[in-house]
Length: 498
Image (cartoon, rainbow, N blue to C red; front, side, top):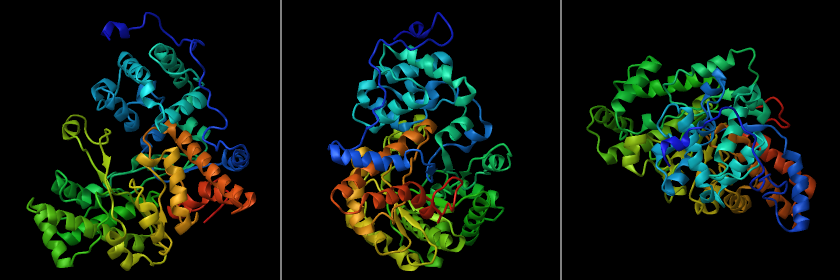
């Protein structure tokens, strides 16, 4: 499409004309199709439909809420920062450069062009949760019920842009409208957490935004520029990291800093779940070699596995919950990494081994009072065989919700059936939206609530629990379980406490 085709001769928002079918989300969407079970599911869903959102793991930047500036345009709200969306478009031949990936801002013509790329390739999203989320967001937040297409691209863009200019669509207003009680971010250990402090100290702010300690790049000597990262860690902690002991002290100090700013959890996403500890002398030796750039790949892996167990030891000391989501090959396409950076849609799942890998860590800390270990996976084969049985024995272990490639209707149904026999409902960690796309938060949580209502309705129809007990379970899954697993405590508006 030529550049001059992107220009608009007029200005101002246009009304979305009824030239294409309306796409108002159906009230029974995702509920069971069998009439009797669907009736039960409707009643169960009604118990949680309007409950507050607890989001204990996500990637929304706290700066968004601290500054509370209007969103600039529909493309940078819905498309550019969301690798769920950009990877699907890329798979259908749209270059990431055409989607504004890697650019700090888009002018109006560029943003409109990006939106047109989404609309042009809208059929590519059929059957995906991405299509579901976007349909719900557009209809229920922005009042756009028209199906996206190249023919409706400008009209729908204008409708969303007009809304974004209204005060009711600024980040803090949407936070309140979404009914969010707690929102956890994901943060570098060296971050000064200034935006979190700004929100905490703002008397006009009534929400709760918590940082999460994410130290992956500081535990992996194989990552690029690791010595420089460790130097920054020492500067942030005001600790000399020239030795292994200083390095450990710096990590402990930064964890304390995060706790002072409201953190309740750490977050770890390594290639595997290995947790074999090293003797202190060996850890010191590998650390010194890594700082000198002389550690082998095997030494770097051994050091990282040792440090994951050290993170568990620190959690037993300082009380932070520990979330593990391994089994991802990061940045699979290195040319894309070099051009556009990380988190651009080419992190891919691999098979995972859990029981043997975690044994060293769990033998030391699995029964420690107050230790919480939340296990996520994108390898469905380990739910019933490994993760749920671990949660069915160890008091510390919680089964993390389906996430990333598994936060889909069918995968969530399979998850409940896979883990409930061994772990029940009470050893699962609620739902996590795991999103950078702020407006997708309510759609994602609502999807989970509908699917869980349907699964529990089937249980009721089979005369396993009765309907009253199933309703109690569903409320706990929405409100209590994420607070317990991630140690969020009681949050304003909660119907249950820890």
